[in-house]
Length: 278
Image 1 (cartoon, rainbow, N blue to C red):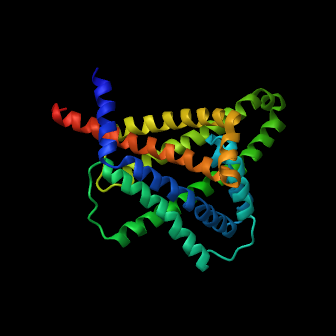
Image 2 (cartoon, helix red, strand yellow):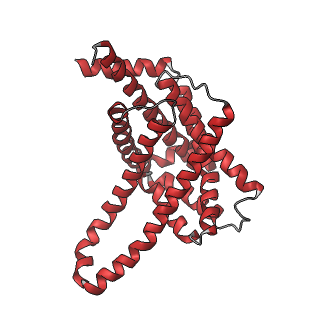
Image 3 (cartoon, helix red, strand yellow):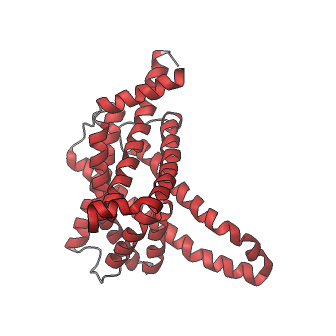
C-alpha cells in the first residue's frame, strides 16, 4: 500500500542520514543544555521579579514526561534554580546561554540532513541565531509564567462572583494543564521545522511529520511511563545511582529519533509530490 511505501521510504532515508547517531547527539545535547537554559530563564525571571512564577512554569515543561524521569530531574533543577546567582551578565550566565544554544544547533543539524539542505552561512551567524532562539524560548517561558500569575487572580474573581462555577470546572484543571503543555510542544516542533533549516517550508509540508512527532511522542511518553512504573528497578539494578540519568537519556533519545523521523517523512512526502508533479 502507498502509505506503507512512504513510511518505509522515510525510514530508509532516516538510515542514510545517520538518524540513529544524530538522535544520540540531540539527546545528549538537550540533556546538557536543559540546566543552562533554565538557569538563564531563572536569572531573567529574577530580573523582572518573576522567579517563583518561572519555577512553576518550568515545572509545566515536565508535565508530559513520565513521573519516574520528570520527578528526579525536576527536583535537581529546583535545587539548582534556588541557588543564589549573580546577574544576567555574569560569565556563568554567558556560558549558560552558549551551552543552551548547543541544543538548538543539534536540532538544526538533524533537520538540515533530513531536508537535504546545506547551510552556507558562517558558523558564528548560525550560533547567534541559535542564541536568539534561546532568548525567544526564555521569553516564551516567562510569558507562560505571567499567565500562571494571572490564573489564580482569575480564579479568585470567579469564586467571588460565581462561587459554584469553580467547583464545576475543577475536573477540567488537569486536562487544561496537559492541553497547554501539549500546545507548547506542538508549537515548538512546528517552529523548529520552519525556522532552523535554511529557506522556508510551507505549513502543509511540515505538518505531517510534526503531527506524527507530537502524537508518537505523547504515546511513547505514556507507554514509557507505564513501563517505568512497573520495571524501573531494572534500571536501578543495572545503573545504580545513575538510573535516573539513564532513563532520561533513553527517553530523550527516543524522542529525538521520533523528531528526526518526522522530518524525514516530510521530505519523503515532498519528494513524492515532485515525482508525480503535485
